Every structure is written in structure tokens, then in C-alpha cells.
Length: 468
Ligand code: AMP
Ligand code: ZN
Image (cartoon, rainbow, N blue to C red; front, side, top):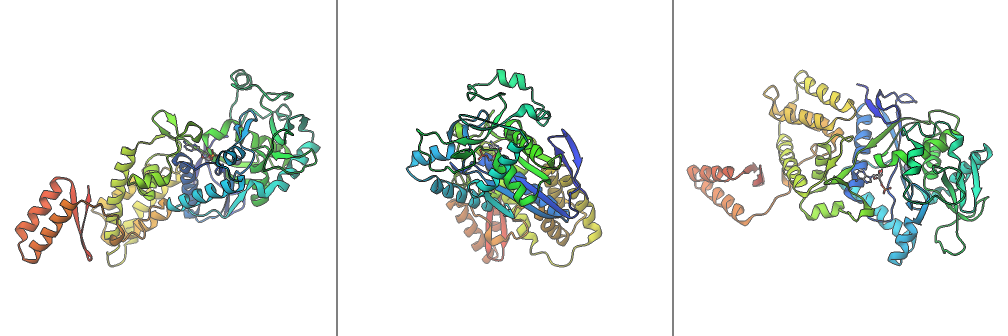
């Protein structure tokens, strides 16, 4: 079933057809590694991973490239002003920029893995691809799209007539509303730096020689240069968070479509909405840095957070509260327990009985990755009288390839067991009663616990319990 995906550029859903038959090429704007990646950042990874899994489930080979921004992302990236985030973080912590980058790249990698995200085929760092960025800037210069001022080499957005089209920008209003004065000498407020010169008065750790002078690349140029290297000049899907649409992706489109032969540069642009705390988006600069490790401390395991994220469509803003995530975690553990129990089912599944559920699940995922609808099918599978345990077992295994929730290999013995001495004691009492064939007492304990929302699951390793 072919996928229909929402394309930011077209502002509508479009049927997906890979440029090269059977092979989807995807680029995801990855982390700026100056601080821990928070759970909002991880939503953008979970979205990209869901997309990748949907493409794989559709029978495509996928080349997924993710970049690591380890230079050039300024604190006011919309106007090319401010400090380089990497340099500032290095100075603050008394370490080298490379050490800071290595620490947070690793944290991000581990968190991605804990969240069940498949590894990308290519993970590329901006600082490893300075040469590719210089080539691109040189080509843009040759074609007359750049100009040089004291601060650096800039892209002249007035020379690309479609500049405002991608994000539907009202450039005059944007310029009016600008909070920070433009760099002196810039021809148009929307012009952006391709190469920034190192200031003589500022000692930078990260700077390189270039045909224009010593300095460092502007943030946007890395994505065009690295995607070109690993995916070619024309590829299928580019993803990122919605905050990238107006500046970062608009600028990526401008420089790529002016330098590369093919237009449009990217066939489908996909953006995830924000994870918010109340009305506010979660952002590092605002000091919200709840990370996966903090969730674990609060008793929310990473895959339970994945389940929480899948409950909302990626194009909807999603509000994070610890209570909502804990409620999702309870639901997730129940789902896992049911999946684990089904793994003991014997016999073969019946394809005819499974088919209606499979096609509903595939239709949900094919409809712009509608994960809430796909999860509803999972629950229908669990409660449908039309299915036998072996059907349920196989359907959950199949669906889990798209969901990544660990349902396919859930083992009863692995289930996270809450500890509560009173409940544990009651369970022991019930075991003892059963041993003495005092089933009345055993049943009474089960009913009492059920009345307070605690369910007993009997497993070959002995009874376990969970809150409903
Ligand atoms: P950064 O490390 O700031 O470059 O961001 C990495 C990715 O996370 C980008 O694709 C952002 O658009 C995305 N992102 C940042 N904040 C949030 C948030 N609160 N919710 C969802 N995605 C976000
Ligand atoms: Zn990018």
C-alpha cells in the first residue's frame, strides 16, 4: 500500500513515490550537540524513525542520513548573530568544543537507541565535512548568488525569486518584526551567512582556512552539502521540527536549488510539531531540559515514552506532563504484558482472520503515519472475538515492526515489576492458600486486589502483578 505523506512545501498530502524505484532516501536534521537533547528533540527523532519504519514496512530499502551540528549554530540563528552555541558551551564548561560535542552526541545516540529508534545508515558531523561546504559556497559564488562583507560571505536571497515560497513568508513583515539588528552590510534582512569570518579579537576553537579567509561555516550550509554527498542532489524526503521551516529549511532550499541541477531539490518535506510543557514549546534555550534519563528516574521507561508520543499524530502539538506520561506508561505496561502472554500462544495464525486487521493497520500508517489510529487497531486485535491467540500473537509481532514498542519480543519475565510490600505479601498469601487448595482465600485476595485496580498475572515463573 503506497504511503500518502503531508508535504510542507505543497501544503497537502501527496502520494509517495521514490525517485529511484524501491529505494527511499531520507535526510533528517539532527541535534546541535552543545547540551543534552531533551524529550522535545527526541520527538523529532521518534517521528523520523516512524517514517523510516513505514517506508521499510512498505518494502522499500531506506538510506537514512542524520547530521550532527557541531559548529556554526548561533544563538540567534535566524539573523546570523550571537555566539556559536558549541564554542559558548565549551567555554562555560572548561572543555574543548570537540569534547562537548562527543559527550552530547553519545547521550543522543544512547537515548535514540533506548527509544527504539533504528540506527541511521549515515551519521555525519558538520566539522567532518568542511571541504564539501566550501565547494558548495564556491559554486554559489561562481553563479553570482553570494556577496562578501566584513562579517562573512552571504547568500543574496533577492537573487532567488522563490525564496519566500517554501514557507509562505511575508518578508516585509518578517523584517519589521525582527528582534535583533541585522548584520551590518547585509543587503536584505533574510540574507544568510554561508561562511563567517573569525574575528581577530575572539579566539575560536573551531575555524578553518577558506578561499575567502579564516572562519567557519554558517549553520544552514552543512545540510545541503552533506545530503548532497550521501544522497545526491535530488532526494526523496527531508525531515525536521516545525521550527526549521521559516529559516533553516527555507535557506537550505535556496542554496541547494541555486547550486544543484534538479528542482525541486527535495520531493517531500515533513515536519513534526512540538512537544510542549503547557503552552510553551520545550526548548533548551528556555531552560527546559527534561531528558530521557529524567523520565527513567520518574519511572517512565523509554519505550513507554515512545508509546506516549505515538498516541498523538506527529503534526499535532503534544503537551507533556509527568502525569500524562505516567498514565501512558501504565497503559504501555498492560499492552506489553498482553503481548508477553500471547507469545506463549501455540499453533499457526489464520491469514484470512488476520487480513482485515492488517489492512486497517496499514491504511492508518499509510495515511500520513497516523499512529493514534494504528494503535487503536492494536487494541482491537487484543479484544476482538474474531481472533484466536495465535492470530493476535502474529499480528502484534507484525505491527511492532512499524511501532517499535518491543511487543514482538516482550517476555513476561522482563516486565518491569513495581514493588509494593503490601501487595507482594498478599500475593505470597494467595500462593500459600493455593498450595493448601484453599481456593476461596486465593480468589478473595485476587478480587480484593482487582477492586483496587491491581491485576495478577500468573506466569511460569510465579505470579506477577500490575496496576490496571
Ligand atoms: P536542535 O538540537 O535544536 O538543532 O534540534 C534538533 C531537532 O529537534 C530539530 O529537528 C528541532 O526542530 C527539534 N525540536 C526542538 N525542540 C522541539 C520540541 N519541543 N518538540 C519537538 N521537536 C523539537
Ligand atoms: Zn538541517
